[in-house]
Length: 202
Image (cartoon, rainbow, N blue to C red):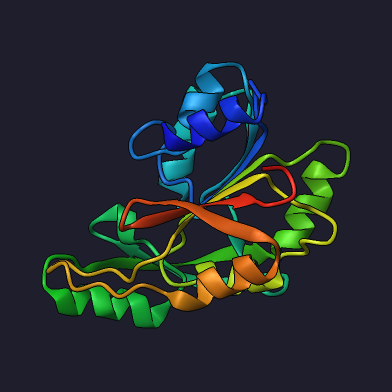
């Protein structure tokens, strides 16, 4: 709702979006509200079981069963018993297990590409308005590799706290530094997510 308000203020009624770590087409999803109002975009979800629902519920979107990494290839993807904690990070998977309320159900091979390759293939002729980013441990890497000189989403929502079942997560300050250095400012913070806006459009 906060992001919806920002786009209303910017007079963008149907923002395009890139949802990285989309998880589910409706539950805990940051782009559903825009899809329902006529928008469309690209959803990236490495878990093939979760992505299947996107094809059914979000047919106007481009739904990709891939992950994002620094370069093209294939990586181990840790499927957790709590699917919201799925991750490409072995460290984050083990950390979630150590918290005591989830387990690694399986490890599967998933193709990965760079975020700039996804942008080149899907947004060369379309303005990218909104990026939603939630990839359990690799958010900073994706933002560091993002070519902001070519693609400048007006709004970015990113998970900026480490996972903790016991509410002891720590803010990832480097994410704020990367985005501020690239001309964004933190508009709102929900404790788990921070919403950034491009100063140039605000």
